[in-house]
Structures are given as C-alpha cells and as structure tokens.
Image (tube, rainbow, N blue to C red; front, side, top):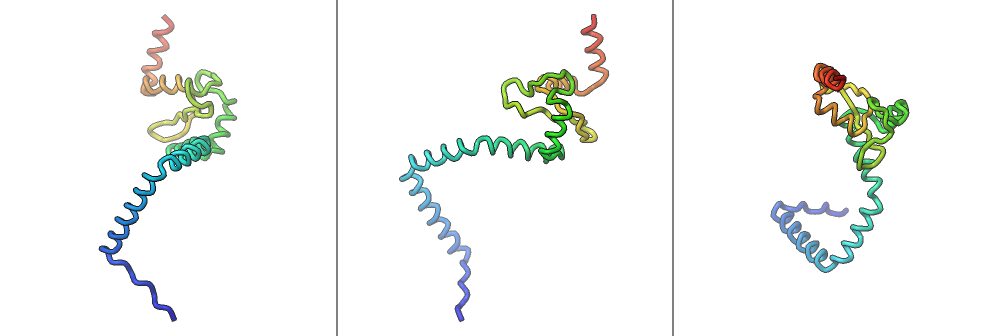
Amino acid sequence: MSTPPKKETPTQREARRIRQRAYHKAWRELNQVKLREYNEAYWAKSKDQRKHSTRAYTIRTKFGLSMQEYDELREGQGCRCKICGTDKARVRHHDYAWYVDHDHVTGKVRGLLCHNCNIAMGLLKENIETLQSTITYLGK
C-alpha cells in the first residue's frame, strides 16, 4: 500500500512557482530566436482559423446566431446589403464580414448591411424622423 502524496503548503507552492518562473524566464532568454520562429510560424498558420473563430464567437454571443444561421441569412439576401444592394461587405477588410443589423431595443436581427449603410444607420441613430428629413432634404 502506497502512501498518498503530501500536499504542498502555501509557502512551498509559492516557492515552487518562483523557481518555475525563474527557469522559464532563463529558458526564454536563451532561446529567443527559436521561440520567435515558432511563434511566427504558429500565428501565420492559424491566422485564418483565429479570424473565423473570433467572428463566429462575436456573432453567437452578441446576436444569438450560429455561423450556419448567419450564412443562411447572407445567402437569403443574395450576398448583398439589405439596404443598398451592394455585394461588397466592407471597404478595406475581409469579404465575409457583413454587419449584423439589429433592433437595439428588442435585439431582433433585421438583416446584414455593408459598412457604409451600417455607419449611416448609426449616424442617423435609427431614427425614422431623421431619416425622413434626410430624404426630404436630398429631394430638394
């Protein structure tokens, strides 16, 4: 019958952590080039995956949509902006990043917008009277 391992006391645990930190710091200083090459290769390899998973997380947590629902919404709109009909999602960024337009009171998703229409909606504060005034002004 073996005896159970002794539990570390808080003092022993802190001493072990200090030793580990010192060891890792020394290792990183001795292997800077190796570590830099590894990190650059890792980040370059996983760049697209990180971009996609970050976008999926944002869409799921902020709007309650899965990527499948997002793709269905995009395809249902013909991959075009719900307001102006352009097929360009963003001016300077990746193509798949349409803006999810939603009612800020109810949280209900209304559709996907291009960058310009999303900015316009924000500047007009989603106010119908302001939008009507803008239309009247442009008609003059």
